[in-house]
Figure 1 (tube, one colour):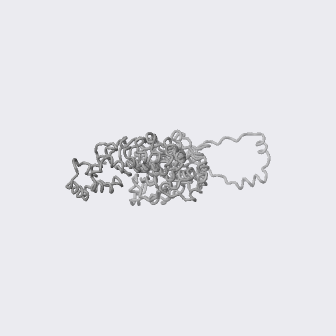
Figure 2 (cartoon, helix red, strand yellow; figure 1 turned 90 degrees about the vertical axis):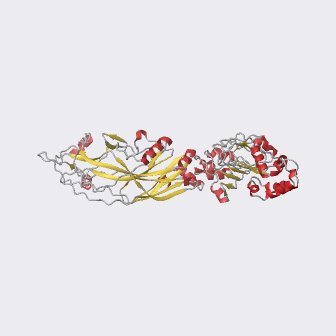
Figure 3 (cartoon, helix red, strand yellow; figure 1 turned 30 degrees about the vertical axis):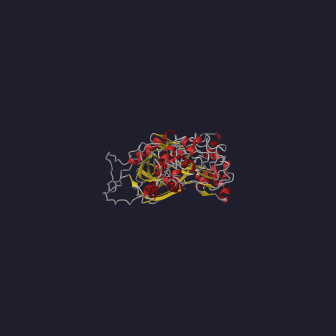
Length: 589
């Protein structure tokens, strides 16, 4: 808007009147020459420029040309029925507007109004448009407004709560209400007060944070049975029938729900292979298992974990001496190599922080960390999957957020999806001796007696686990080290389409943050035990394996990630009940 001096409403009308009706600027008697000049001016381009601010200009302009002696400010005030003072930098509506005694429609869109007194509006007014101003409340407007007002438009302002201003005693004849593009986030408080307006038939709350809630549409239709148009869409009988009684459900109405999934990740490079385990040669080299998961930050109400450690039932809970432990002791597996744990809860409340080795700090990751500090975002991750060239993270992740105004701002920005590689090293160590069996009288009698046929048969059927032993005869067991996490790649997407739509999906090449190897790595020397002298000769000399010559590696093909984000919107009461009773996606599906 041009930078010009602010005006009151009545001064703006006077200025436009003098520009549109030149007869008002003529001093002295009106003669034949004056009429000819007015007639000539009425056909000029300048005269047509100021004809859009009222529907009454055409007829009044003819009077200004043919009967200039009757044109006066008082005459104009009495004959105007519509007035559109758009983008005039008006900052005040004074009592001068009351001189428009027959005014039906007033538009003050695109001005600098932060308040307007209802007592300063003509009593005859039926349509009032106040779009794109600076309103944060409607306190003064709700005091003695025009009694016959049928349409009120206050979209594109800064309103956050209207429950105190919408009363059937203040707006008894209001048929249409436009509150679109504000910052209203309380679903029930807003709809309960709107439902009290007896004449309301058309309601628009488009682009407000409360529209992100899955039950917004259903609750509106159930609470306002006489509403005919909602958000510029006509309401059918079937629409209303689907949501009968939904407003009585015990639902967190101000909560938005999203599901995020990654149908496919293609062209993932293969991790380096492990050296083979050779029990006969007492060779037990370190074994690495690789798994991958997607991670992203989102504004959510999920609680954070304590101490930055990912806690889960049956999963990693504590750390002792750098070795990941689970319920029941150290993770062990006799007779083979430990496999990676891929059972992870989603969502989680913080980054996987089970190791001092964090993902490499990149510009993108540092930006995400800043967002976490500024907006108190939560971090979510998919289930970790073992390596495949094409991975499918099929299980959707549920995200819930009840801070709807902040969520609207968050969705207006970009969202980053990051691919994380989890590396767990497994190595052997000397197993502690097994505790002796308790010596009870019954067990003593059983030892003296002969085994029954069933006991002998059972012993034959049960396989005996083969124990791992080092060269010195020590019993070994496999243990897992603290996992390492590496940031492999990421993509950034715009999520603003979720403000108006329900589904956001696409496929995008990833920005690779790790440096792929240019040659094959040398094989590392294995070890059988951290406590044994495996791999050493009696003379003390180390027995080393000859490393193969490095082979050039072709540059990897670009990673491509498919993603889908759905904003949940209930289409009937049954869906509302399912999401309320089953907050876990596995149960829901």
